[in-house]
Amino acid sequence: MTLSLSDTKRKHLRKYAVNYSALSLLCVLLTNVYALFGHGIRSQAMDLMFLYPLIGGSLVVTYCLCKELLPRTGFNLFNAGLTTLTVGAFLSGILEIAGTASPYIPGFYIIGGVLCAAGSIIALLPPTQTDAK
Image 1 (tube, one colour):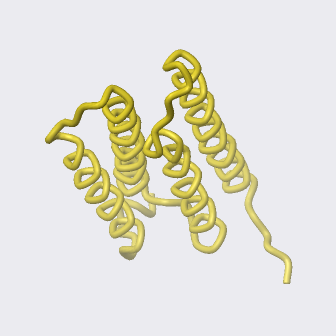
Image 2 (cartoon, one colour):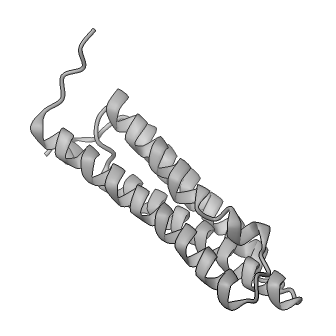
């Protein structure tokens, strides 16, 4: 079974894969630079924050390979959720390293999860007439 992709879809998939991989790599670099200037103290939340763009990007690329390109609204909401989760993990790591806490950190995870879920639900809905244009 050969998977035939249009040139437009192939270009979008390549762009998605490169962007999400670059963001994951940026998270790893940011974590290591922060640990270097933090005298080697590390945080699990910061060490694992690269997983949000990596897994989220893998889901987007897999969905686009199996189905069609995501609707713009769903794609934007999903990316906003991934960004919120990644920033929440980064801030959580900073606060862990500093030895303090904030009551606002769980909000990042809740809002990020809701945005990812909303984007996923919109992506799974059947396309409307305006989406087909």
